[in-house]
Image (cartoon, rainbow, N blue to C red):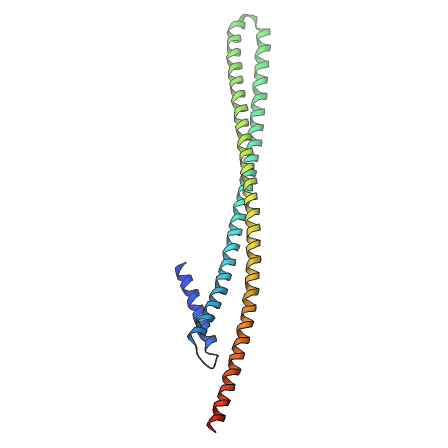
Length: 205
């Protein structure tokens, strides 16, 4: 960054020297004013490029968050489907065991204990699945809120960038007016110098 800054200022100075050499008389003060004018224009261009880069970074960040939300949504749907399938399997297994208990009265107590144990595990897994889904929903809502906030900040930043761009345009317009005035003053000064030279030649004659 320092190298770019120095190269930019050297370029401004070189342009100022070239422009100053176009005048018939050399003036350090004039050279300084020309250099400042080039420096202001260079600063405006650098500011515009920086704003553009910042907007592109914000846009990329928002797109990445949108993709993350989509991935989370897909994962949530897959998890819900897997849990639903698991619950159906557990329910079918539970019904089958109950039917076997009715047919096999002698094995009632043993199988009933196993069935109750399996039912408890199924209920626990169901609660865990519900808790996991609830957590996924909470995470999704949180991510959506963060994306909404990021979009709001991006909109504010874009508005600020537009305002700054407008100020830059106004400043460029002001610089152009100053440049016109400066050129008019230079032309007036040149005419005065030429007039004085004519008067000096007349006085010598």
